[in-house]
Length: 430
Image (tube, rainbow, N blue to C red; front, side, top):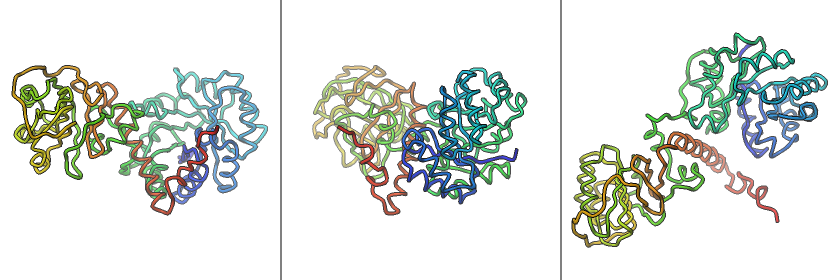
């Protein structure tokens, strides 16, 4: 089977899906998928609209059917779906009923092996049952922690004769690898639907597929532990807060920075008391380059930080300081470009008495912080990411940023935020 490019329209609004589908068609997409969120939001009507708008293209309904296979496939097929997706974890009778219904109404069945433990064995079983395609699918949530379809494809091409589809964070850089691993249907979502220029993004993936060579992309790169600093530097503190469902945002900690200054690094925690600047300054000697010193000064209004401490950090490569207490010499700190965030600004400093400690679990701005957690600060504030969740949150924050970029482009073309997001449709009823 000649390699096929399928775009996954994982939207919740029909108008946005149809617009992106039109651009993807201009870019050379072969198959158009109504993603599961889109079907759940718009129902079978979106299948009808896609088929009417693109009658020469294969329309895929990602129903993710797990029960009542016959009726669900019938609904989708009668609405115009050429391929209907059924989950591989469904029972054999469900798969069989879906296949019989598809044959009756002129469509085909793709069995998605999402969350199937033994993919090779299940692929052989559903092929015998009559499935037309199988799909190796790494879901969005799994992608955020580093999942990839490449490892899932292993052994499948030799196990079955029916075409194999692959989905899960694929872009113009990874598409050739997916084809080489045995997939003939390449399913791309975010790398196309979140692109500023959908036509160009689609052409890039298609070029990569036909040439067998990677084409550079800036969209939907998955970040590993080693690349977390790069990932967090790309996003804003609001992006990170959204990725954590509003958790981790410090309260009452204000930026003392000039426009464009940003802070990203791992926390080195300090506990002290109001006005005692000994431990915060001693922490500078223990800090590594790119660390962020996070100080719990008990919300005190006497400064525990100033210009000289900031210069010490800057020359050592420390990324910034966050103080649940007071800082001074703010004009000089801003001039040197050192990221400083504090609850208060004060002229008077206390004395270096040495109370407290370094490396303890602390609370800063109402958020628990441990040494090694990631700290992201900009003009909107400071957000803490627990180190154990950092890879996932970095990838989710990138996803948030890319979706906002897409909305921004639609607004620039004449829409408003309310109209682009169709807010009235989603207002709570009653």
